Image (cartoon, rainbow, N blue to C red; front, side):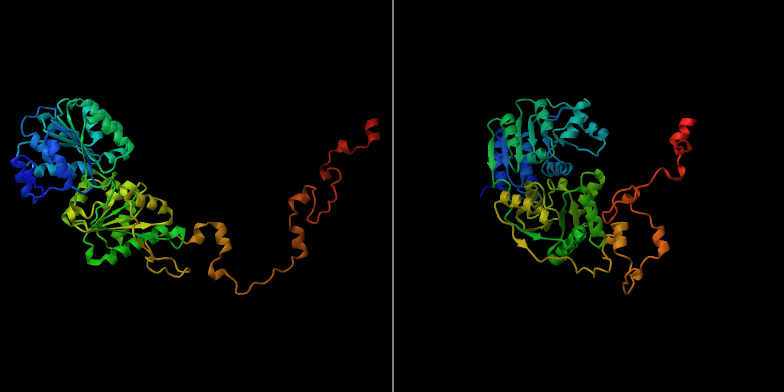
Length: 480
């Protein structure tokens, strides 16, 4: 069995790895580190949670041991799709380079440009950045990429999903042609294949698992949920989630709950907090300082439930996540693999539960096709018993009764209980004077046909308002 000591890493790096508690490399690490140390381009294809970050950080630290950084000219560049993933790479660098004098800078949004400029001006060996913030610094004239010796693109398929591919191509064009490139992705879409064939030169291809497969240590299941009524689906779906959480009992130590939309993340987090669950949201619209505090609390164990959008599906390296709940079925099948990859990491057991509504069944089929297996179904999970129809539901939704929501017409069709007469009686015949006061139908006033088909008597002349010159006889007009 291969050990880190067999991979020809720098002794200072090996010491840091040992102090971190690792002895045996994962398959992606054992396959990628040797060609990387030889200076070859590397194309790594592996599922999330397999140790991809260390597979490029460790050889990078070893190769950068000789040399010196210059101001505004980083010696290596790591591109990540999200702030969280970039921060994770930076943490790995701090862990494994602590016995060296190498420096780093982290360029992500939500942080002051001034602080980042100060780091770049001093010169850094490793620059870790998201594509947008990196180009912002370059366009401001604060950064030169002509000194990059090693370039890493992490989670390339996520870059594709987020629309970063044009930025990636531009950044490639700003770096030297002689650079060494390491390219990592969980899946290989046609666009990713095109980029690798364009910017990588005879890469060592390391593929340690089938494309887009989940770890075998994760127990997967899907709850087939159908609401009692369409307008009650959000309320009942939240109740089903709470029941699933409660049913797991002590086995659930912490969990990440994924939603498709940022607005749903906020709603669900607020609902769980209302019912006594320790939950907090994280998505791209939140301030970076708030996102950092939330993640730190979840890592430290002071926060039990992390309600997240797909911004957190990549780059969260939290080894001890016991459960992942897919509150919404992801619209892209690949996202399912990355979501559930937050649990069952580093050989640990994990559990992933998904809630599927009838409208989600097509997306569920796409997921099963991608992972090449049928996810076990769970039927019969229902929310708490609903109150009688006449009693308003005492849930978190404060919606008015359906009769009121449908407006005046519904109110006329469904009168209040106290106004309903105990016995209906046929209306009495209208009195003659009431009949005389009723307006005639529009057709009859216009001289059209009555209700029974007979034609009304036509109006002769112009009534009382007939002008006098018209009322004169023909003989009178002639004599006049």
